[in-house]
Length: 200
Image (tube, rainbow, N blue to C red; front, side, top):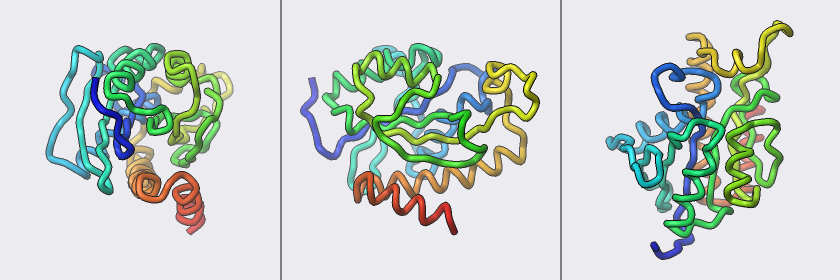
């Protein structure tokens, strides 16, 4: 087992593996971690069979951050997260999860802790395997389909349009800044600065 560290964080992006799911709404978490790694490092994600996840490491504001993309498919995301957290002795309060949210307008960003799963199966799995919701989450709004007859499952697994992808690049940039605020100043500071930036 590794020694616990107060400046060690687990950054988890939720999504589904495979080319079929690339650039889909449900893969926003994967997409953000790709954005973050490209911004912070020249390294790439590597598959770690021990955790059934793609993993990369970066330093952000003097914090050691392990970036994790579970390869278990969304509904079993918690399996990989719990394995990594236990092995590296990372407290649940230092786990940060990035995922899509139907109940937020597309491109909006929210930062919370101890919130419900909102019907998100990946979050349900993480809560089940960690036996707590005492972790931080960044929720990326994907909105709901305008057509009420559009199945939710089809919506979240549909690909973002070109204009939506451009919008999310801006949202990812905002999330990166907010993450920096969180790691250096704590949750309240990050939430306040996010609110200020979102109102500009």
